[in-house]
Image 1 (cartoon, rainbow, N blue to C red):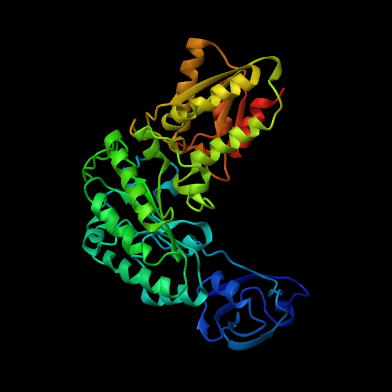
Image 2: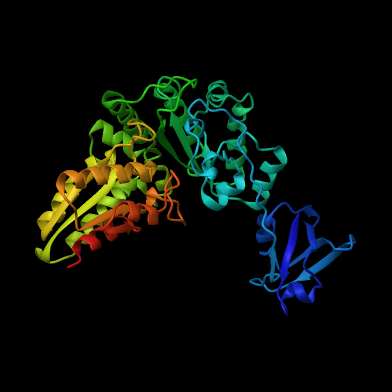
Amino acid sequence: MLKIAKVRKKGLGYYLGLEKGDEILAFDGVDCIDELDYAYVLSATSFSMTVKGKDGEVVEVQVEKEEDETLDVEFEPQEKIRTCHNRCLFCFVDQMPKGMRETLYVKDDDYTMSFTCGNFVTLTNLKDCELERILRLQLSPLYLSVHTMNPDLRCKLLNNRFAGRIVEQIKRLAEGGIEMHCQAVLVPNLNDGEELAYTARELFQYYPTVKDLACVPTGLTKFRDGLYEIADVDKPYCERLLDLVDALNEEFGVPFLLPADEYFVRAERALKPTSFYGDFSQIENGIGMTSKFQKEFEDTLAAVKGVQKKKKPKKVLIVSGVSAAKINAPLWEKAEATIEGLTIVNLPIVNRFFGETVTCTGLLTGEDIVDAVGRYMEENGKVDEMILPADTMKEFEEVFLCGMTLKEMKKRLKKTKIRVNRDGGAELARILLEK
């Protein structure tokens, strides 16, 4: 059901007699669930609406419109989202300490958010009628946390006796033309090795409707008391995994399996070229992010002619997680060789908050950044500028995981100019090239 919040004067809805407070119950006799139903029906030039007025009267309204015309109405927000019914052995939310941003504790598992925002979902809370709705509305692509195509093993991994239904669900979605991007969070000795090979082959039978399978390491924090014991991965493990991925991709003839960047870092292997990742559809999953960043950075540097010279020497501190600091160090050397007068401080921030096993930049807290930068400057003196990656903060708000705001960070790091890099490698190179 959609409740009308506003009707624009002289719009189509206005002329159809719609008013604020009216409720749209159905389109063409099919129950209206949310705005996806509205978006779907707008593709038609003729349809009917079942509308309940403020007085409780229910009427049928016939709509005739132009192809690109809307009803010119706004709806009240629907804030309720479908939440997760699982207790996954590797759940990151279960490893979150108290006192962080409230939204970080929400276990969303909403297929509508998968289609609209790219959130990964398990489909364990999906009713048959909802699956039929996905097919009817062609909600594609979906991002699915598959983890394994072995039904019994998936029930164990997700602690949900209905989790094995994923095999039939993916089959029906593929037959219905729904494109899918899949992921497997790999738990050592459970869904890796031969189990991963089995999962990949089962999914690849639906290629290219199933577009790819991301292989992601389990995120392990220090807050795992009472949780399933999971070993961290080391260099030999990552080498074996990458060898398996290469072998399977060779078997398939396409880069179907996409390993997370972290595996390359820990295996101390060269990253795949950007061409390997296609349109970077899984970049938010840590897949190909580093390759893309490095290529953008190097291309921007290569576009300048000759050695650039600063008006005066400049010392820049670049903040990142341990993994990024290690793998990007050669880039900073290239920048220093290209820009005379530039000194780069490559500062890896150890994640004290979540634990040293968490090495990615996006999970750094403001407190850890302030402490590390403060210690550096106490020991080595101030820098001219500090560059902070935008992915350490909330997407549309300058607040860190711990709740610290960027404004508060600037107060804590007095007299330190802080620049936020919001556009990857290209923007970082442009910042460094500034005279």
